[in-house]
Image (cartoon, rainbow, N blue to C red; front, side, top):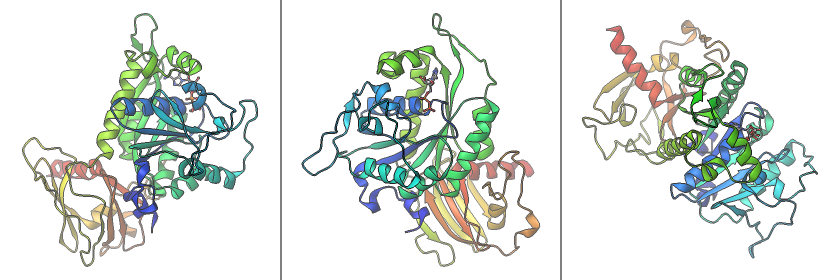
Length: 402
Ligand code: ADP
């Protein structure tokens, strides 16, 4: 199985169907609030009625047990099947290195051991049937993250960043890395974005505003929301009762819930073309079927209801709102935003159009979750991910050109 197929066809093929949608929460560096986001997000999904598991994959500095008030350092309970029984906290199931070691004895693990432990945390735990398994990844964009992304059929990744430029640049690098291993980016969360006054609850922006949204737009990935800086989040983390449980009325709790709602909508089968698919362009094998729900007035702009090959050089899309779009396949290649085609720091185009053969064609087009396609081309290029938002924006650009 190729990595692309693994990600477009989550969990099922690898005997992991009981784990549901596996969502990784990543950040370029530590301290940006990744574990806090993972924990509150898991609880917000559970509050919607989902069965949720949370893996604290930060083996070196496990903070999730503390945030959820889980006792640490005890030998784990084993199930009759010889699997570890996860802790249950505020209605979610949790596995963390902190449950195996004492707080004051940090795990000393080398790269391959990290992957081994994580495999164990995912596969050797009595999770039961989950709707979502949230992986709180270790910070950074190194080998561990790469290995993880490749070893598990992730539905996608949520990238957490703070609003400072340097943090956003690191987040951009993380996103590029995920894209290269074909892990769909479900979106960017900007954390500690503005300050919530503890008395009047008004949010004041102390850093620049909108950096996360801008980066998301420039990379063609969704922006999921901005969580304000709130001193109550720190207290809740220390007391083992995360914000969405302790202060459901706080502005940040509302953002966590919105992010959970957006994510569950995004990973659930949208009314568009059925996924997964892996379409061979040359002979049309496994072309995606049209949606059972046809285009209609008031339909969504970024949900395709049909994907077709008008001729060998033209990809046709019909959107749920009834708009039809024809994309020349060379234009599709030129629109690629992967790290090899667009400079990751400046956002400037690296791809020189004259190097793209005039007769280039796609070889395969495959689904990535329900919000993007991956395309491999006859020039060997296959790292591009085209979100439906990006493809739809190409239609808007066409209209402006006229
Ligand atoms: P990471 O997992 O990225 O290392 P943590 O989730 O452990 O980061 O958060 C680091 C610290 O920042 C913790 O003390 C946490 O309580 C605090 N924190 C996280 N998000 C916020 C926020 N929005 N407002 C205030 N403090 C926050």
